[in-house]
Length: 65
Image 1 (cartoon, rainbow, N blue to C red):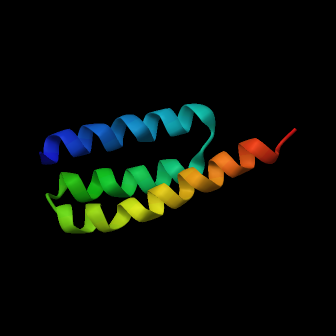
Image 2 (cartoon, one colour; image 1 turned 30 degrees about the vertical axis):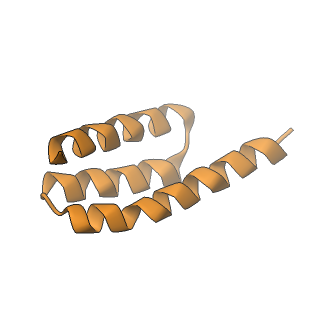
């Protein structure tokens, strides 16, 4: 379970880097680090921040012309 979560966070971090979503990359990196340390409690607590960063990124995309 931890390995899967770490791999997903790592993949998301790379994708966020590719599209210039720095705050999403930072959030995914934090989750990846927590998973690497087998600290799933902190990883799960970091997910709402990641969700917030996704929402902010989407809103920015929708408002940019």
